[in-house]
Image (cartoon, helix red, strand yellow):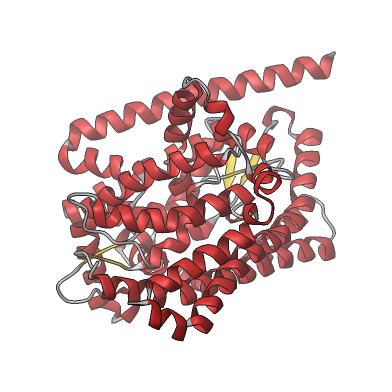
Length: 467
């Protein structure tokens, strides 16, 4: 089974999404050609997103490493990036069986009407494997590892349900879609709480400006494309030790600015492919549900947050947070994690934050700063246990991608920087049975409340149909 699922994961989203969407389309009555076309567009979207992300990493990574060397900013936790973290997660005993276990949990929750999300985002199941693997190596117990992974999965499904309407109401063309990714879901309570707090401050409404408002107020300077160029040029200048070197490196500096601007411009264009591919599937699914499964009204397809990371506010705030996060990493006392390879994952902090802040750049930026501060400390805290997992996988596979330089611990912003995963780890590692009991009670309470919400929704739908 480990070999089978390793093979499936190894194919990647670009290959498997056309397969999954074609099969799903045929099952809900779409013609083979239309279903295949939808799947291919989503697959091409993942390819395009990988290319753009690689451009960001290849352009920004060496520049930031130079800045680190010049200013001696190296800290004790080495940033492995999310690909290495995913490799570690899937190559542990927990990761080997995480997909069938979680799919079984999803089916059970659908049958008991405690969720309305069908999570087909298989590639992001590594988040659940990650927290399970860290708990496994900290406790030396496979049972505790699977407990943490399953609890994380269940809470994520419940949060996906609870945020589905808000998500679909804010983003266009996302009807019938929810986001069951725990890295995004973990920031929902902060988005809600900080947004409520900011609303109580007099005059804060004057600072509420979305990405479109920035374009109107600042013109060209408010465009994500232009901001990308400015930030890229600024980082390029930081790689120089004096004005003379800046003059010598003008071609490199301008090139870095153009590449950063290109990333800001290309990501929204790539995400259009996801929407075009999803629309026929989501429309047909809703029609099928309304026609044959009247008691299952509101069923959502759980998809990757990659669908919406091209939103202008996400791009602008993520870009502004890059230098801010680097500064925080150096200045915060006790922090040992300097995010470099993980910065490409910054976009994935905000997909479920924007529906609460309503796209306000200021509010979203405040949420981003708060969660980045917390995330840096959480990555530092989990680093020893993540290092044990990475070393075990490296010894077994000899994969250079998961090797940690001598003298360093290992870490990654995504998923080690997630409040959800960190809380689950603390409960299982330090509180043990009491912590497990708290997690079970919280999860059961959320399941009960979600089931009540689903029942009310079905009752309202039935009454409206009778009317």
